[in-house]
Amino acid sequence: APHAAPAPAARSGVPGIDAIIAVASGKGGVGKSTTAVNLALGLQAMGLRVGVLDADIYGPSMPRLLHISGRPQSVTGRILKPMEGYGLKVMSMGFLVDEETPMIWRGPMVISALTQMLREVEWGALDVLVVDMPPGTGDAQLTMAQNVPLAGAIIVSTPQDLALIDARKGLAMFRKVDVPILGVIENMSYFVCPDCGGRHDIFGHGGARSEAGRIGVPFLGEVPLDMQIRETSDSGTPVVVTSPDSVHATVYKEIANRA
Ligand code: ADP
Image 1 (cartoon, rainbow, N blue to C red):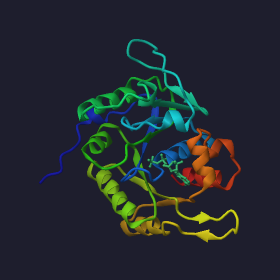
Image 2: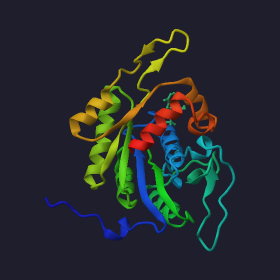
Image 3: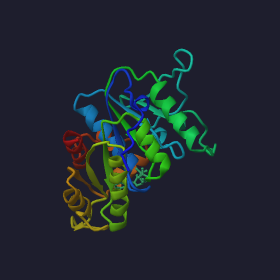
């Protein structure tokens, strides 16, 4: 069957934003949001003006990861001012609803909320907008990938086979809507024991790199499984800004450079 072209209107760009990049994963819990935040901060450290759009409507994590609370102010009419954290401009469903409010929306409402968070926000001039995609590769994700005018996508995966199979679905999803894959990041790639200095490949190692090679997309780097990354992520003090000279911050900055 002929390949249906995406509707041009849905793909139109956002004035002022040079490039929109999706960070995605085939399943939840692989560290996608943590990676998206540190990648955004790594891009900012390169001198770029960066925004973050939290597209995970059901499980927004940007308020926590960037330690931002409060509600966005409206500028005029429906247009909202983005929130700010560590110099990043940020929009998330988490700023618009209470944490206790369960989101029970169906697909079309999710799409319209996302469209609003993208197009009815005064982003100003940005070099890059990093979109933290919802986990998974279902219909909603596919529609989102299709509705956001993406310059490319980055896939985050752990080294396990299962996560890799899911990551493969993610790659297929973006290919389906003709979004170029900028590369694959292996998260929780290895663990260096703080006591003995020994290195342990808890979830195996190198799976994402070999998979990237096999399908011919760039491999952007390996992020270790580490207490500091977990703690700084969960406390809203991302490692790239709070310990900019640490080994981990350097890893993220190198990935930002390659992406
Ligand atoms: P996702 O967005 O894929 O659901 P998160 O970014 O929310 O994943 O991460 C899930 C959990 O794993 C969080 O508690 C986070 O702090 C932790 N985490 C993510 N990456 C790492 C890492 N490299 N080392 C240690 N903990 C990590």
